[in-house]
Length: 336
Image (cartoon, rainbow, N blue to C red; front, side, top):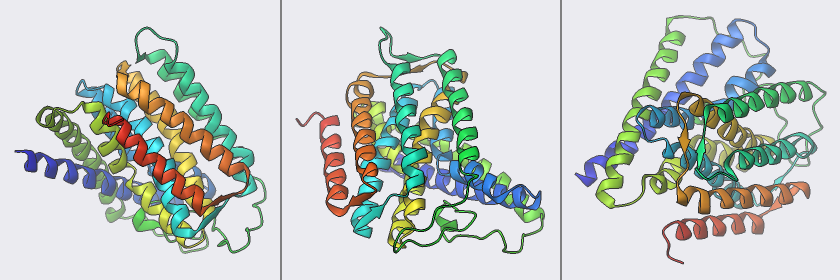
């Protein structure tokens, strides 16, 4: 029985990731065919695409009455994005150069988003995110989106030494990691494009549904809190698109993709995923998530901001991030 549900858990994660891949790829093609600006597509559909698994899993958790999974998944995913993915990307590339635009725009937005999220969670007798707070988070996401689009409309920066020159569209899913320039012939809309759009949505729905079922069953079998499985297993699984994208981008010296992907995903997780989920039903935040996960996310964000301000994240900092993630996992299981 245990092996069966572990298989269901893994298969559900694969469906989620692949469904997000197909959904974003077909949506991008539809947007280009409708003559929507490649830049707008890049900072909306494509940039948000890597967080679709987190969103689908969170909405399924809310509808199944396991709302504590949402905050655990979001917080765990953000911690994994910084400590695990940025750490691994830096070790692979030996360094990550940070562009001025990321320091001027993305770092302050990520920091302020984390503060806003902390304001929503902190100072309550009952650890719960209600629909009014969900609306606040979702509104903040649209402000973030508008501000990012308006600020990114300026002339692009000159590439950093050794950095690959980014194209107009930076695709962010594993099967789409190679950059696709706007001047490439635009594919006409056909049945295949819409078929993969529908298939992507179906995979997201089925994958999310069985993922939450498997988490609940594994929690009972292993006598582990669902939030702990979510903050580790679900969070890492739904962060696989970010992991593949950032590591491969870093290895190819595409530093802005490697880091920008993480910034955008973390902001969307906190504002978009939490906001939308809270509008459906109030979200409970369990003790482990609040007392261990939330402070760890604050520390991760603070360290990323400090490292980013120096305009270079070195290999030893990446190794430190990986070590801290290991300590976080150990702490979750109460080993120390």
